[in-house]
Image 1 (cartoon, each protein chain N blue to C red):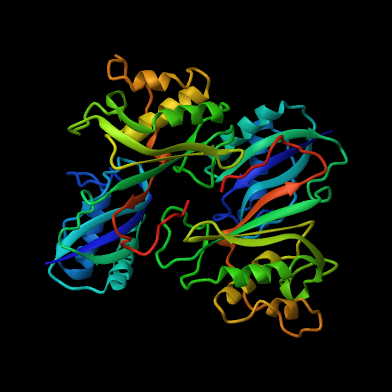
Image 2: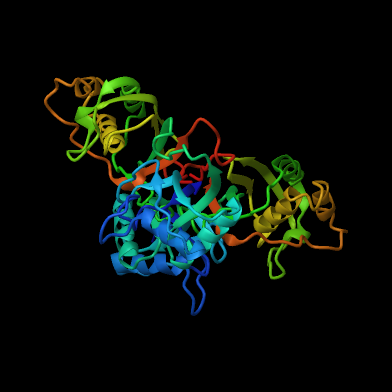
Length: 260
Length: 260
């Protein structure tokens, strides 16, 4: 068997998420179908990050096994042909033949996400479904103070979805910074080896409440205390969230995918 | 009569351009219809820049006269309501009551454009119709050298469309710089008091030929010589072009629109 890894970009809007589900439309299934159309082989893909309904990816990574041997850049071209034909907003940006012990999910050492907030009154027509529109002005300095409290190892039990299946709520945040890209647009960047289900969106929701001045940045310290009885009250919508990069020990695809 | 100015963002993809034309679908007409739905008054709009078919705007400015007196932010909300109802990808970001001698086109002191090139093999699904995809690697240093030759006052007769109606081909470029935003994305920024028809897209097309190594940057000096017998051979597609900002003597709307 040969194991291939793929670098994948997608618009999450029309999908139920990465993960295959019965009777809904997943990114994984769309890719597996395109692989079958191209090679007449079935491949089961394992994704590095299980993005939720409506969440986008600039640099999702997945791997799968097959009998045939294919030239990676031909796989890229062929998969994109069938994805386009099926009108799926998914693009394969790279492919690589990898070792049998490579695992897109378990070999990953870091997952990087970006979240975009459109902070203005007027709606966006140039990037629909790509931002969270917040009409009231946000205090970016307070948000950055709050974002810095996430850094390091904490118990994130107050930032997980009720259906989260992770063994432990202890996670280590390696990067957490929020900044104004310009007058209208705010970007939050966060990275960790792994995240709980819904964690990034709940972190962003919390930062928004702080940015509106409804809570002080120190509120995050309370929510990070596992004794604190209340959960973070707000999960940011999926539209603004992008899985931007998966880091491995080696550079699988010669370069990073960063469109936005 | 009252004169109002509007700050406007649009996705140019479905339109024949800014300017109203018989039997096609223009941004100007869509806005005039929205204004009529809101106020039952007819307003004829004058735009600062006549963007072509498929060209986008982050900060188009237009003005028009009407009998009624309206609170500017109510105009913004009302126009956006009717634009959304009509499914036009147009957003009004600001409105202001202006002096009778203000003219969106003639009072403008600078027009700023950005052009986005997606320089990679894989297609884009996150920003369709927002970039020019160039699959071969582009030499950004040579392109920047070429871009710098555009600065200053030159005769742009080799960079105008055959139907260009401007009185003179002499234009003064105040800003011309190209840079990699990241590994996949290149941005060209250019600003001048005014441009000839098709000028920016022909400038970008020329830079692309240089970036591919088919011509040296000094080729631009030849094309800028009015004695040179040949026109610039390539006009970049409209998809990547954004009218990003119009500068006036005063700040009409408290701030700049910059989504991308």
